Length: 388
Image 1 (cartoon, rainbow, N blue to C red):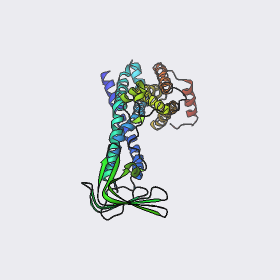
Image 2 (spheres, rainbow, N blue to C red):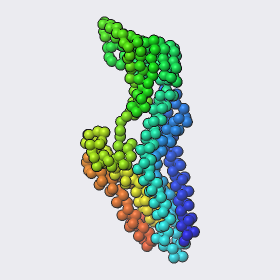
Image 3 (cartoon, rainbow, N blue to C red):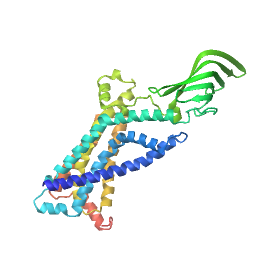
Image 4 (spheres, rainbow, N blue to C red):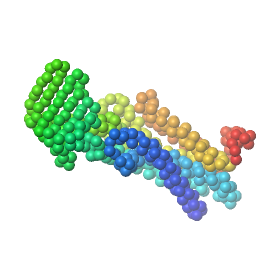
């Protein structure tokens, strides 16, 4: 039995690694195109985008680990069923219950891994993503001023400096024209200026010293002298309106979500919708990792009773069953955030339903009984609905 459990466990691990790699690869291709379009006008390279994707991985792993766990268990037991290994083991007195320790251990490890991502990894990844995004926007973007070149990256604002020291952030003979206010043009000139960045708010200030302001409003022109004048810029505008400072529930740690639920006054926003999002995200962080264990157990009887299916058909069927689960989960999230139903009901329902089906299915599979729906599919297959 130790040898059997060891073989099943390592086959599960191999399939899990393959499934996660394939799913992350597909997501990477999609996100690369998305991030590339985001930085299309910036000097952001391939490896910079790859680094940003690395910090988004906890978010993706939280979503794909349950389906990877389910597919690994399903394909392992489907292969064993198709190759008649389950029949041979049954003939030698090894029931389905005796084979459960390996998949249960595997699913438990996947669940613990997903809980770690849910409680800590997700917030860490999003924080690092924002830090790196700010750093790239500040150091790699075209806003890094070039001497003698007019910069128009920010809508309605034009920058110019005759001499530029980007390392020290010092400008000589600086000029800025602000046309962001309709019908008004403001020109600021100064013999020197400096660039001051604020990572916490993702803002950059260009501070002019001892210059003049030319303000034209219609036919009226005003000229003012100043000692110090600053122009505030939001780097998020360079990135298609990305908001660095907004605190979203999905970016918070589980501890922070729990704190807001205990003390609503500590929330950054007092809107009822924000509290609903916090409540929904709290239960989402609890229920989604448990989906690894539940979907893994659910996959065992499904693979057992659908023996004889080719793996490509089994893969399509498993994906379809997962989509049903995830659709129910997504509906629970949407209804929880909108206030239609309490999040605790909407997010726990898919897990409860699938765990009941899993336990009933394992009992039927161990007794070698099939559900009526399985008999119907087998009958359709014999008529040519599915090719064997």
